[in-house]
Length: 407
Image 1 (cartoon, rainbow, N blue to C red):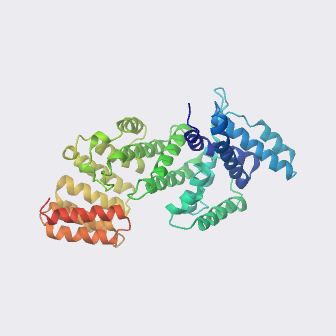
Image 2 (image 1 turned 45 degrees about the vertical axis):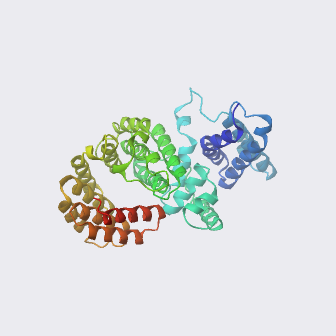
Image 3 (image 1 turned 180 degrees about the horizontal axis):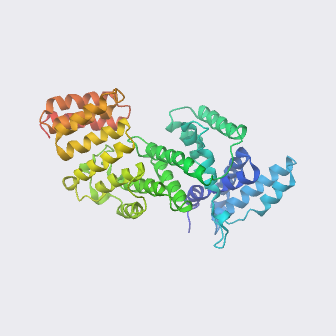
């Protein structure tokens, strides 16, 4: 017998965004679409434990949300065309096998491109994607952004109002405009994944980023950077179960129990990477992740290959963080002196000052260079700068290890 609570959670994850997207397409009313989808979920929570989980949970939710929208629009005396279109919304959440090309452009993809429009601030794009496409509760989004729920509600309302006022089209762009807009969509998904993968992030956000990347990859085949981003997500997230020990503390990559890695995700990531090429920034990062994912242990890691990939990435995307990670790779591949020299170059502009990872990198390379006392001091300074409790504990533990005579 299907557990009703689990069924509601699964249906929310799989169908909420599609229902909202379909209703927005027909009504043009973001608030109405969200409210109707939410009311359908609330009714499912009430009825499914009593009546049983329907054979097609997503279709059931679509029907309830559609009927609720019809009621609201009828009471508001909305134009008959919208009512007719709503009546034609199929109860099936997935398109039929013989759907035409236009039908294959998933409503959720239209919604993703609208939420990720460059007219909106990046933070608003991420929050709106979480709320509208993924169905994440506003309170959970607010907690991730370190603001109150009322503040996040206002931000979401302003973002939706801007979409209406600016008449941002509800569609997937085509031709040159698709090529121009796609990097912005991928940047939102990358930030969403990062917010879930960070030391004290919300793991569900990383899961949603992977789900949306799969969707974009399925509906926009032949885009190498989409495949690169999905491969990167899968390879990185494959380590999630091994990143913390039994006490909940972070475990560095070289000390993780690799039997706990998700090897199915690694296999999928490596297969996806074959479609990504070797030129885009996400593809290059995915190739770096693949080097780690295929190493038998820390000692088996091909740091020379990783350094080479970082050289190419730094040419394509010379950001301070990329240059910082390049210093690490060269330090492990060619010795700490090489890494420290590149670190000094990366820090020259001052953009990495006050960044805990900068001190942590200097500390690790210093320890490998044979000065554990100074390295321990640097690790403690890095811990003092970190805002993430799990990261602070890990940095302090490394300092203590060096103080005790560890390597």
